[in-house]
Image (tube, rainbow, N blue to C red; front, side, top):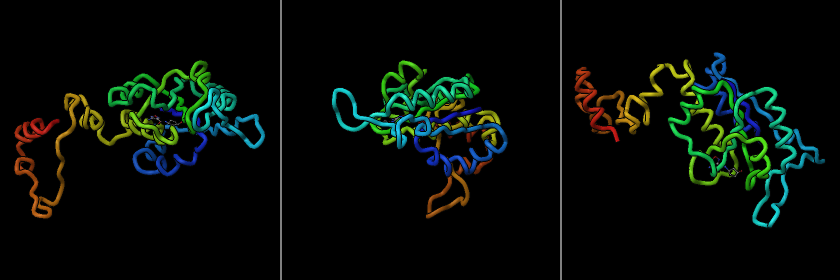
Length: 215
Ligand code: 4FV
């Protein structure tokens, strides 16, 4: 799966994507993430990408020209939907992440900064707005990392165990509920014992106990 990220801060993604599961997924060609610095498309001197809002109000907005030219250039490379990370958007969920992974080979993620972007970019180029929660971040980059992470877990081969994504919280295996408590070695830690049933080897009993712990 290919992601193209339009952002003012491409370097923010480096450490997050250069480690662990997502790094391996990229090395194995299961995941591609390309970055496009919106500032590179500014026609203003000094790469200006923001300006004051018409009608007044606090803060600055991202101006339309750099955004339009950046996204238009990226659309030549990536035929997927343009998704703007915004508190206004539909809420990211297990189901929505899985759907993106199943229905799309590629996505374009647009990261806003300041108070957001000129609405005409939404009118002209944005296909969907997506939110990771009802709060406001200083930039869409963190939201884009969350989206890349949550969707990538559903790309076949990214997680060691094919079923893992469905066995986690909200997964089909758990009926969409939040997962049961997990324990690993040692059997006793700070005087707290791992529930006996989990060490019994009785799989039916273990399954029953786990189902009883779902929330
Ligand atoms: C956000 C969210 C979010 C709004 C202004 C970036 C910021 C700034 N994105 N889910 N919540 N974005 O707060 O996705 O442009």
